[in-house]
Image (cartoon, rainbow, N blue to C red; front, side):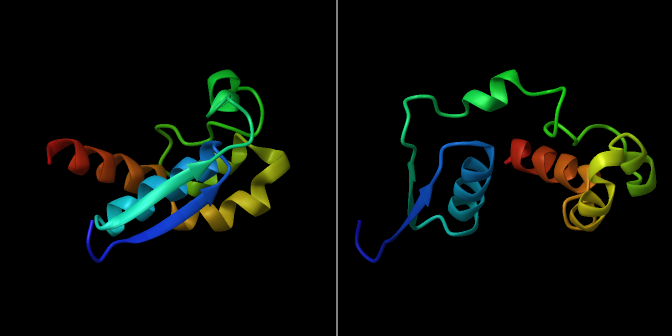
Length: 98
């Protein structure tokens, strides 16, 4: 592949894959490599749901979302502003149509 660049993402968890997918999406000529020390890519994603994971759902108001997640409300309030579920759903629908 001429004129390509490589990016290495260390960590095969949800955050690593989020970064890798978005890097590749934003720069199609970028070769993205995900490195994980174990043989269990995304293993925590499979068992998540009751803890600090899966906070994005069909609740579209930040105030309503943080009510459902009191122990991380201050942290999440800032991040929900950048990554609102409505924005992600719209982006996913748009990508699915392409």
